[in-house]
Image (cartoon, rainbow, N blue to C red):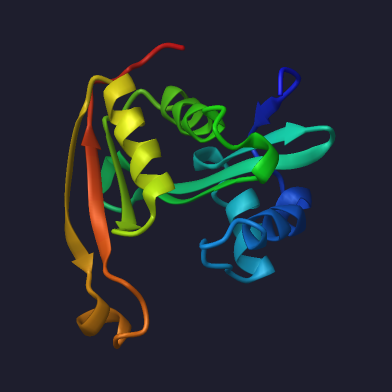
Length: 163
């Protein structure tokens, strides 16, 4: 993974990003069109890692309307070959470093998604930030009993950070 290249995604990456996310269970798969929009309209707050000319990881995010200092991380998809190497955290840090106004990261995680909990706890520690969580979208109220409760995770830190 030494020759990994991190960059903003482009519309041409959209379909390959869709395939990557589909291979990363238990992530929810969105439409190809959604991934195309992430890779084009929202590419300032998304990053892709390329290894051997194929996507090895993808992070999608956006600035929360009305909270220009808060980056919401929608998904972190890391291929099997790139797992355990800190690639997800590197992609998120690349986004943060591109905007000095960001001093808060938000995301939602189910209780059973150990990989995401581990990633965001390590990220909070590396940023010398504080991590809090609370139920946000609940199984019964928001998902009609069809999806586990998503917990809102917030990491507050001082920016700018420098790589």
